[in-house]
Each structure stands twice: as structure tokens, then as C-alpha cells.
Length: 90
Image 1 (spheres, one colour):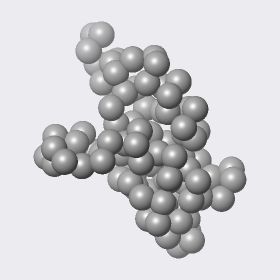
Image 2 (spheres, rainbow, N blue to C red):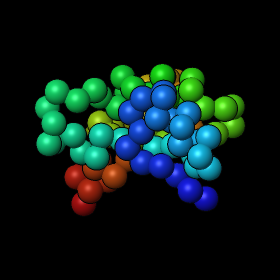
Image 3 (cartoon, rainbow, N blue to C red):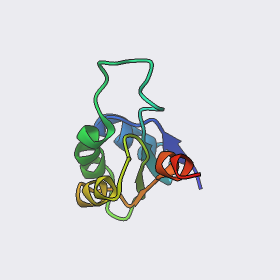
Image 4 (cartoon, rainbow, N blue to C red):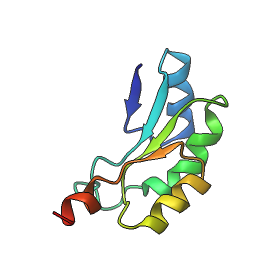
């Protein structure tokens, strides 16, 4: 499967799927370089609405606790990456 990472707009999500992507990955790639970028959770509803039903929409940016996972799922994510909390626990 081909999943396009870094999708932050509905337009980009629709284009990715139209050009053969099997899913989209909403991510700011850490967001450390651009302090004025849109947050991944803020972009998620637009991205989820722009892809056909059944298309996986993943999210991994800004997840610090379980409530962030619940918010992302409620806003349209199919799955949520929780790497940072896992590494902080080691």
C-alpha cells in the first residue's frame, strides 16, 4: 500500500487518492521548523472529509496523551501514531 505522509489540506488528500494513494497520513513532521504551521488536529477534519469513505486517514503529530488519541479518532482519523509518549516512558 502507498500512504502519503505530510498531508495537511483536503485538496492535497483528494489529489493523493486520485493519483493512486491507498491512504493519507496527517503529519506536521514534528512541526519544530515552522512555528506558524497549522496543527495536525486542526487539519484532520478537512482531510478526512476530502477522501472517499474507507480510505485510511492516519495521524501522528501532537499526540501526547490518550485524550489526544480520542480527539483524533473523533475528528476522523482511522489510526493514531503514539511514538513520542512511548519513547518518553522508556
